[in-house]
Image (cartoon, rainbow, N blue to C red; front, side, top):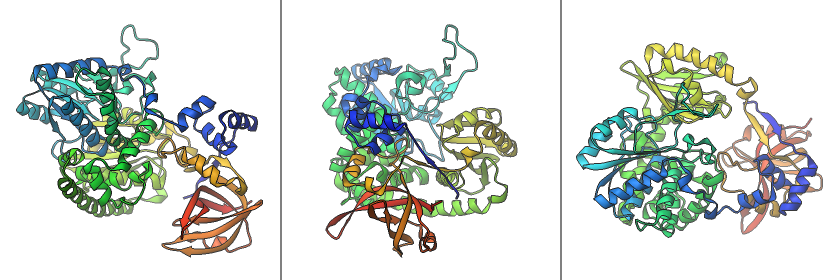
Length: 578
């Protein structure tokens, strides 16, 4: 697909200023400026995140009454039911809460909804389960902010509800008396405490995942100290919080960056039997685990349980202290993931066959019968990436279309769905992903309404994928020292991508195809020459054999091979030079 190349530029004098005051290279200074980091003190905080940078958890609205209610449960010997979700974020958040409350001496049960049997989120069946458990509290993680019916059912049954969630809350169209002008007004379920950073937009915590909020809950309990849970007990939960944070594709900045930095230390030390076993089935035993590696190794295996069946045993895996149990459960997840891949491939190919590329306009809306509901989100995500359009993929059953939506960076899909709510039976999610339900007869009206919303919200340029280049460099700028500097930017992921550099008018030498359709060659420019590899770009081989020079976009790396370490450019895109 054609992509626009966009080079970010800054006043050279300011780049020089930040480079000198922060003692970093000018290339790194440009990269940090692109990420909104423009002061030497901010550079130090970003490059060296630590737990001391975590904010006060009691700054989150609802945290104080939630902790007070948990302390009361401990005093009165009540059972707490932790209600989670079936994806990696919800499962790791559940494991954090269960471990936390058990450590505080509280009797805990947990409930993970079944995708097919219960649907998404906190619903009345969970209240029935809580009654059977004789629970005095239902504590939700990664769900609940829109569960008005279930919260009311719990209240009627005499069960208190504590909601911890990070999804978008419902907004009221009526301004509350005394509210500041322009201040958002939210509708939340009746509960003894509601913790959701999106209810306090100025907190700086609105990007937390469900597992991140569970970690803040643990931080609050450690700060309180009265239940025997201490700050030393907090750190070993960072691995679960990091896993959930990476899985939910939230920006890896702010407190998310701190959580992941600390959590990766524990993930790599493999102290938790469940995660150690997951490393083994994910073929990661001999590799250093980095954030972007989790997204296509451990996370899909955990998600496979919720996509293909019941994910309750994943919590047992994450909390297991028995190596044999952990190994058996991990093998089970690995098998489910293989099955998921086959099902996903079939649905994706069927979905592709229904797209008329010549008539695509603003949005993709596809409806099928017999499409497995567990893979619709993945299929929607692939379609959104391939066509650079918001994608809605539904399975139709008994006249009701249930599906998943994935967006492009420039379009807030939840805000768009809110503008079409009169056509929907229900929806919920984030700016970039959502679950949607509507009756079959309303699908054509919905597609047209969403097309109008998208046209009103984004420009034509937003529908053309772009390659955002951090800095235009000379090959002589690429040094082992620069690569070491870039290493301080990790963890890489959504909101903090790996830096992309560009270089112009490069001479290509010795191009050849290697491996599975990869291009390997050498480039020369100014006074330097460096090896380059372009994965899955064998189709560009012929264009490299002519006399023309090329422009290239790449990330610099160190290639360790045959006992040596060599500079290498990992090429992401190339084109003939003007």
